[in-house]
Length: 369
Image 1 (cartoon, rainbow, N blue to C red):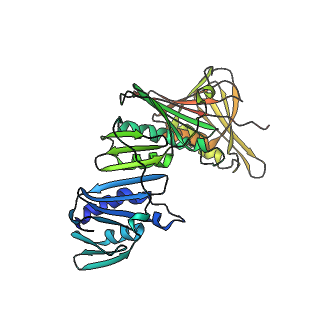
Image 2: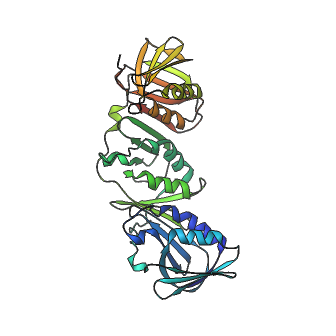
Image 3: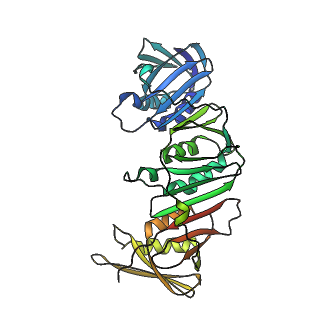
């Protein structure tokens, strides 16, 4: 393997793939990047066995070949090099020499044969989606996925692909986010459960204006645009029937300024329990009153003006879940709907001029008098 590449091109490629290298691993080769000189340019690849990223950057190839190199050290070396051509040449199967100007480095790698193979995803009948549309779904939904290992299926994001629309749903059992937007990306339908970290790589790597090709096998998914590809394992199993938990009969409606609601929740949440983050919300007329009473810490009270329709209601919530939902609401005002203190509440944007539909749900906490 021997090639010459502009430092800027090499750094751009490393920036694309290096975040996919796991911070900790018991398999040393996963801490390395696969560097391959091919007829198309230099291919850089990284994986943590669940998500894999590969990109090709232009270079002058003298001889083809490949080796894996320590990711962190390679990134640090290239970052410090002057803006000039970088000459990379293999010395045997494992050692690589890097030269730029008067700087010269030798790195010990691991043979490329030990690097895990990428899943064979073929892009012969792909869905085609606009990166910006996909990023909008990811940004507003993925946060709600579970991080607990007790229910692995909830650690993923459900991505429903239909000929005329696509929808994403995520939940941890206590909160839920759902967004849908029109799309005409393909003739086939599919329900895919995708790890959030793979979606985050897609959101990070691709420009919103790009068109992505998306293809799948039985248990892998691939994204492709230009010279960059992302592959991920799919989470297997049926996703819970989320439709049955979304309330249809909530008849109490509050319209409130998002920033005012956020600020009040933060204030009273300071003295909420570290375990439950329970905050009591009391709706009556044009007022929303907040109260927190934590026996071993203290209490807090606050109130803001709201537009409220319905009988007076007192309901408890985990303030952290509400604050997280409000963070992703795209409008200045939000609509909250309720049925009863023990029933799920919904949060939606008010006056959002967008073809997407967006709804979040949060389960209440039992109030302790």
